[in-house]
Length: 432
Image 1: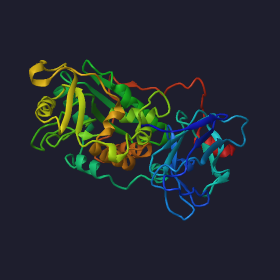
Image 2: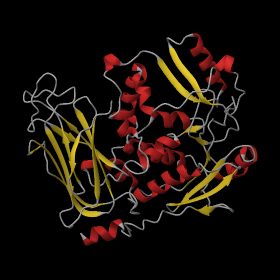
Image 3: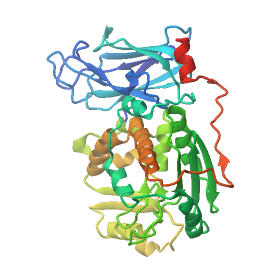
Image 4: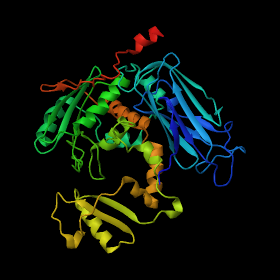
């Protein structure tokens, strides 16, 4: 059950979380508790910034369960401003640690972050972020990509990217601009992108190209944060990988939100994960941070049955449901809809209703593996690092200059009518 107790909301930018003592009776120590994370650095620009709080007791031991009815307070203010337009949330991860996340709706010269327990500051609180501190829609890219990656703590290499790109020792933008649309353009849904001078251009191929909005969004968000390399590439908008040639000769580099052991598509974070990062604390309620605060019942109350729900978009799913009907004590799998195959109720059982996303965390294996992976790999800064590193490494493979081709249109940055931002990094630095 999701338990996050809020006693009240103070003025925007302040939130109070009420905690209780741990089951063992340990006393929370403000002096010993810890605070860390990327949200304490001004240069780490994310849709929703975040940092961690770890509860520690008076003996210096970290809490391993929610610490009780002691008060944690987080207050974020802009010292030079009368009002601070920042939304704040605290998420209890039920293991003695908390995620504090905040979304800015304006840019500020400086920010002050106070983290307290029992009216005492924790760790090195208050924290001062010396700006400019930009909000998500502020178009102020860092010109030095190496400096940006260092600020974001991006890894020097990502094994998945290295594996995917190893199939393509070189990329000829002129060649793939002709051959990929000829090979896939009529039957598949593709987007042909060029990033030139940090501007995004697109041409679509195929009938169903609505999912381009997710790719547009991450490219525009990245270009607002960092100077992107000039690069030209194709994105597969479908649910399955396209490049399945067994030989490495004459294969085409195609970026996809999916992959398999027998395909050579260049894999990206899924569109729904990407969208949840961009819309954290916005219109999307499920994201990698909120999931960590909704990990289901205590471990001893979880069941050992594997669980699955979904539609019939792959033949393997039909076999999974048939297997579940033979071994219900091991697998709980059922269809929520039929679209691609004929529904034979004698084989696949009745159509069932959708279940809550958080019901999946009743299963031990899903809860343990999913939580660990999300914490270590799927936070917002990880996703931005992955995308940028992917395009950076791919750009190095190009043997010709990428071009803005005939028929391409520019993808415009969103208008922020509520809190307009016309800042520029150099200009703001000079003013400060």
